[in-house]
Image (cartoon, rainbow, N blue to C red; front, side, top):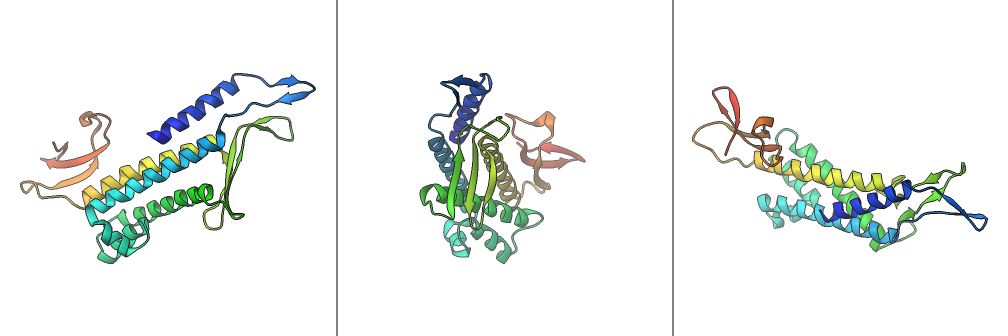
Length: 219
């Protein structure tokens, strides 16, 4: 939520600029800018890192932090534990690998901010003009040996990480819940998408039960 607030503030700043036109000033061109742009990006990345740490903490509730840390570094520990214990049925193991990759990407971007080096840094550009004198909105590029990211609009950069972390957290809950289901009166219970007519507060996934061939939300 904190990262979303930063994203929305940045989007609002872009909309204000888009509503205006460039003006000539003292024989030059006055370019717009986003106040505190580097600080905004830094805060956003730090919030994303905190969020993905919370995702790891969620996995620790089910498997134990000591067990996961012993199995590997951070989210790799979840993947390694699932693989070694053969506790990952279906798509859980492939998903955990993708989640671990996302976590490493976010952590490396944070390192680029907090521990910048020639081959570990961010290149943040405010509003600029291209060779055709067209206004280019703020961009970012991640310089890193293992997880580089090409130059992209900061708006898309932020949106990508927000969407990926939210989906990652949601799907981790689904997989964890589906692999730890307690028996309920002998009825087959599973975890999946709740039928639209049975959803509450926008929650997409939940416990489901088969009642005479009809899938119903449990609880």
